[in-house]
Image (cartoon, rainbow over all chains, first blue to last red; front, side, top):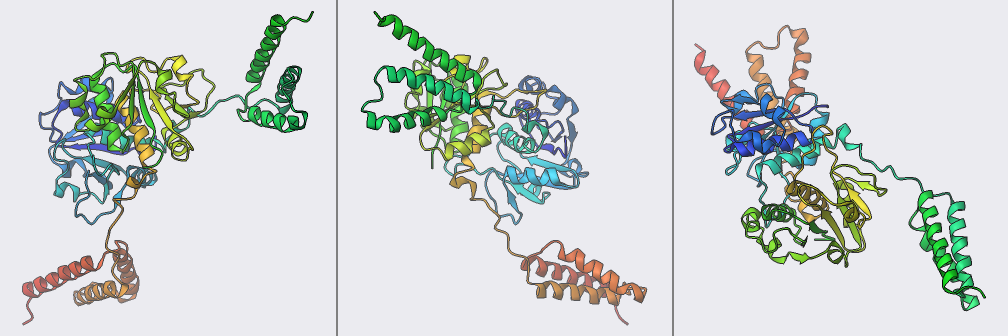
Amino acid sequence: VTNAPIIILVRPQLGENIGKAARAMLNFGLTDMRLVAPRDGWPNPDAGPAASGADIVLEKAEVFDTLAEAVADISHIYATTVRKRGVTKPVLTPAEAATEIVSANARSAILFGAERSGLETEEVAAARNIITVPINPEFGSLNLAQAVILCAYEWSKHQQLESPPKVELDPPAPQGELDGMIGQMFAMLDEQGFFYPPERADVTRSTLRNLFTKPAWNSLEVRTMRGVLSAFAGRHAKRSPKP
Amino acid sequence: VTNAPIIILVRPQLGENIGKAARAMLNFGLTDMRLVAPRDGWPNPDAGPAASGADIVLEKAEVFDTLAEAVADISHIYATTVRKRGVTKPVLTPAEAATEIVSANARSAILFGAERSGLETEEVAAARNIITVPINPEFGSLNLAQAVILCAYEWSKHQQLESPPKVELDPPAPQGELDGMIGQMFAMLDEQGFFYPPERADVTRSTLRNLFTKPAWNSLEVRTMRGVLSAFAGRHAKRSPKP
């Protein structure tokens, strides 16, 4: 895990929200949480249940009386704000901030304010950059854990987590297998007088070939389709037996 | 708003979670929700309070008895799954799915399963693609609203919302202003005998020039710094008055 930012909750009110933030963090591999003057003290019995198993984050959480102490060892501080304020600092999206954080040469931290009020102006002043989530201008209602999860998620995109679930599809079947299937089908259709009138036959065949080329079926799927065709052929044979 | 996907909650259990999903959606500009067989019926009195004002989404929500009915008019169906399963479908990240959805030529929908169990295998079968959020392999605990918000957030990146809060910083001051400030400072330092020994003076000046070029101060900031220097000069003058 490279350059994981520290998540700093400034004056959080509800233990439940601290727990939810911990859960949001751990989902995306962040484990370092700091709390500045949590309203109801620390530890808080409401945090654990809300963390849904992310206890490690809560156990490791460090508590500070002031923001200044909490960021004393941090080189790159980002302050999250919901709305743009009259601050002359670069405003980054979570994605832009994540890109900076992973390539930074020193420790980064992201500050999140109290649930209702957010960060105070002087708290924002401690940060070199602001992170604002671009949000529906007519409905901005991100809660604390959601703001945390979006930042953690963007950071995680730069980590190994990103790659795992990639496609493990079987490759499309070799063209010969597909042609075999299409040939079987054409023969069946021919038998039914499908390609009529004869002068349209080539166009119709071409249309069908395109149609069945599109799905990029793998070998198993092609075999399955041939089974389907064979079943049709058999059923047809049964329904109208040759005399 | 282009190509907004429809969010389909399949067999959601708690009204509260439906409300939270609505809130997550509207934050990022999605308004079309469909419910398939909500466990406790619809409307559900627990949904409204949890939506925190995203009532429009709940009011417009359409309810269906079966998934088949809910997706009958949808061309591109994405199924969200937490863990990879033995399904031979492309697995996309929310970001990749969003890119597809915005450039799609027809309506898209994203399916989310019940809170505990997720989507059933036959429900996933209705989708051409799977969306899986790349997550901490040792702690995957995304709830319904969080899964919804990540998909909505990725979609919103392609919308107009993306651009608003960009940097509105004042540009760096013209070099002449910076030079004026540096000149003032050098003169003050010179007066103090700072540039000693003389053979090191050029290197020291260069070091300082680099140092003050780095912050890219704007005109106001340069003027402020000059004010600071002037104050120092004044204070110094007071402290050691010329006889």
